[in-house]
Image (cartoon, rainbow over all chains, first blue to last red; front, side):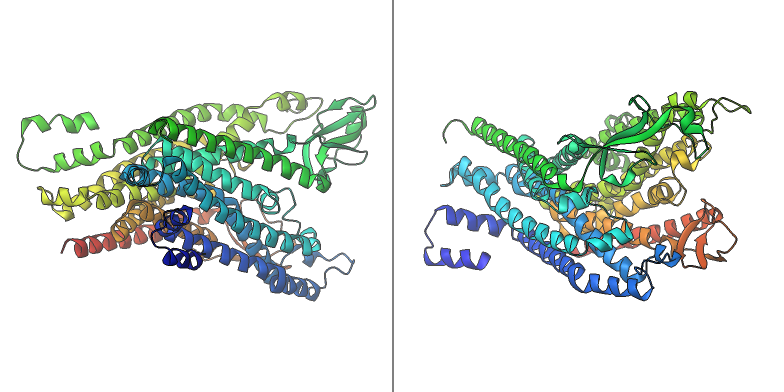
Length: 332
Length: 299
């Protein structure tokens, strides 16, 4: 990307158009650009390894241990080194994607906006030919494009690795589709949170025009927002109801709320019977119920969460541009 | 603390004294000082409250029977107690904050304590006044180190008190990563290592944001490295699994079908000492590196 834009400016060195602004952006933040390219490259490589050689080795080890034959085998409760490596690399890749929004918020608050405001380089840019509105637009658009491209690539690769070896996850049983990191990394929400991080960082940088305080506040704000929305996740779509007579349906999916059923259908909390015989019938309990999200609700939940994150992003961007307009007068 | 050091200033004016340097460090980083004070106050108040809640939480977690027999409370009464959940969440939160304190400290030390001053040129200004670079860096490190050590130690001790009977159902097992770090001297050692790594990153980069980023990355690496290898820090015990149920208090390092390698709870202190020793050695090397970088900058 840098090479292409550099050539473009070389042919027209006096152009002050948006290309020049994009070039300035990439040049000033070249270490962030390099870091991002490196992070995406490494994570993509790791996910491809998980998809290919990692999964193959884990399967081979699984078969060598004599598991998966249908016969019960206690040894299959323990995972070998290949399985451990497979799971570690998948987990670290997901964790990287999970933390990208926080890194983005810290960088956007500190380096992208806060430092420019603190040093006065923002003001210097505004008295040159760049209007404050275009300055902010370039500051947001270029990182947003790079973040979206990188995060969508990683999401596609994570989906590839996750869906192709679904049986492997069932066998290990450590990771399920509604785990925080897995859920985000498998869909559009990871990208939406990265953009939210950018917007929150930019708004904080303008509000507290100093690099380090903006960095700290933006990071805290993003973590708080991401956790709050994550807590809302089970309530973003009406759940399904499942009932069972023998045992609590724990493995149904993402459980929103559950309990025991009495004979007349009342929902009561599960009594602490600890397997004592007759204890359940004594309390008039005939079954169990759970409101849950099956795996089929994945995209509905994902799109709702993406929508909320993008709406917050839009609100933060709007607030940032309003604030900038207010600060710099109506001369835009 | 600030008031104590401000009072001697008006009495003598020209000669530079350690008191003046101390006052400058505290005054320059007053936001951090206030935040640290507020965090300590909040932690103290929270832990006192949690400690007072411990007995009630213990009752909410006790065995029960229906109908109540053998001195056991009825299950309905036990379930009605919600203090155990509040208590568990509160203790886990304070413990996690202690275990993760290293990260904000490292970022602050790299960014605000050293990096910003070198970037702005205020460090150079200070050196051309009566403060030598070595004394400047010594004060920059000693004052936060003293305040961080005192505060963290107090919170760890108070936390150990608030844990009461150390019931693992309520406060987690001793070998959980956060619990292990947050209940012993390693908590202080991690914070000091974070401070030292931040100072080193600040001196090496000489700019606030890259230094903050590098210090954070270094601390994350160190933290994760030690967490992954905690089981190797002291010799393990290997036992045959047949006919022996592994107690919950055993920190399992690895297991096969027949044998298990573990640390009994008595290994808590040896591992704490070894881990603290490693961290303090890292901190010492980082401080030495920071002074070396300072010398290169000022020659």
